Image (cartoon, rainbow, N blue to C red):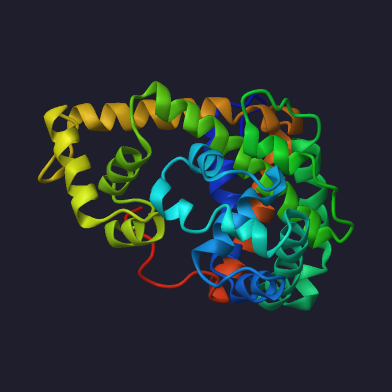
Length: 288
């Protein structure tokens, strides 16, 4: 690995670590803990738990910051969620769910072992003191107190990195001229990430809305019956490159050698979680 870092290194770090955050969206422990404080099962748990660090925000704020979800789906659950549980209780329940999920997926020895401790220290170095301007979800999560347990500190740090990158990704999508739904359509057309059916189901878009977005993208010359056109590939490539560039700062703070070590640890821990069934089948596309 070179002694300098580029935007491509930000992408490598994201790929190595992100599963260790996003597994919570599929872990049964999350719904158990969140319904335990009063939320209703299903999508309410997702919207409330991810937005809770911002406080009891409106559905518009959630739609703006989450970006690719159907606002109509969000309005079914927010702000009602805040009448059932406080934002503070939701945040605490989420950390309890992470605690249980990590212990189950990694096993007690690994979850409380040296690799997690080292990864937690490295990710915390990468995240502390990052600027919050223009990054609302990251800023809200950064205001939370750091957990003491290393495995929870690791998850929190990776969450910060994910939201830091995600806020930058919204900026890149806006600059690239894609709505949230168009972003989903073009991303699934790459053969990576969610399958089309999973994207529709999890983000709340109907077949008709999806087809209308595809038609608009065809009119702009970005997609065709086979997927992305060359122009569409160029738009997506530019968006991903800008996302990576905007996500680079944490890794510059860490430096090349420590980033290489963190990527190694992240891959090791992610393989353990994936091997234990962290994600259901049929949700993500298989193209590499």
